Amino acid sequence: MDFRELMDVKYKEIIENYLKEQDEQALYLGQKFSRKSIEHNISPEEIISLHKSIMLEMEPGLSERVLDSFDILLEVMIGYGFAYREHQSLRSKQQELNNEIEIASNMQQTLLGTTIPEIDALDIGAISVPAKRMNGDYHHFVQDDNDYISVAIADVIGKGIPAALCMSMIKYAMDSLPEHRHYPSAVLESLNRVVEMNVDPSMFITMFYGMYDPYKHNFYYSSAGHEPGFFYNYKSGEFEDLDAKGLLLGVDKRAKYRQYERQVNVGDLIILLSDGVTECRTEEGFIEREDLIGFIEKYIHLPAPEIVTNVYKELERLQHFQLRDDFTLIILKRIC
Image (cartoon, rainbow, N blue to C red; front, side, top):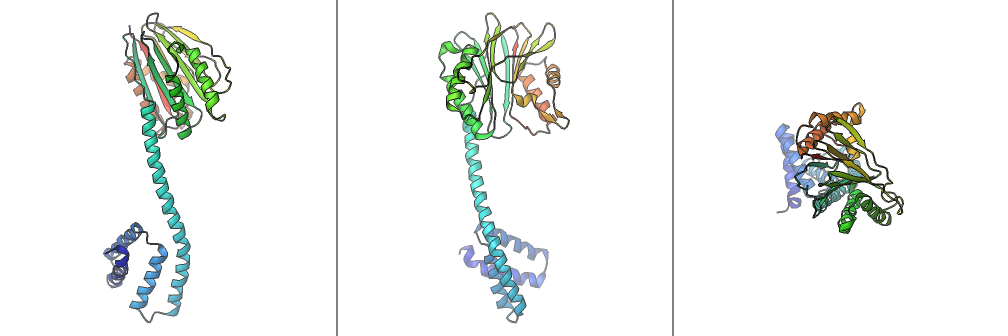
């Protein structure tokens, strides 16, 4: 039989048992009944009404004052019941939304997935961790037929699903670029026009785009308002900012982007990052760029993939394992 059909019998047994024994076991049976009632969507006011009818049956001489008190309790619980049912409905909708976001997150990982290229001259490490389920950072590698390595790192000013949708659009636009348009300045100019036409004016995207020439060992790069990375000179042991000026994508469709160039020697590092790295917040405030350099120096003797992983773990620990912003760190290390 259905629980609803048996509930009056079961509840009467619980009351009789409690009035007789008044022990923990009797209370436990009441808790089990409560959970079953919730599972079968029994409202609080139904429980009150059932309790009143059972008490009248068990105690016919119950005083009028006690009976009247059940009436006011019933009225109070009607309002409570409405709120409870609304809460249950919202919980169901929230669970449904969570499931959809989980699916969207998995789809984003598939859509924005990239493969780290392999060439003899470079050791490449990359890590990208979202602060929430959807990632507002984006990084992408391209290796053409001549073994030129292009790398993009971007950040949407915003978070959540809108940011993730923007990144999917950027990925599609990059995949649609002609083969001869992979020089950084040309790439940013093309993407800027796409963003200006297709993204809401309240949203902006920063991007750094670089291309490595494996024959001359030159690194060409341009930036659209993105967080400057670092260049590590192995010979001098010094870090320099990879400064590059340029408007954020989507501000002005006519924007032009200057292209910069660096010679890369054996042992040199190119370090690219999102602002979630430099804006790591600790109890004392944001870390300084010098602090980040210190962490990189600590692991600079390791292969590039191990450097980025260890630096991420250090910064994650500083934030008590709770990222406040999406985290992306890429290192290109010339090894021969």
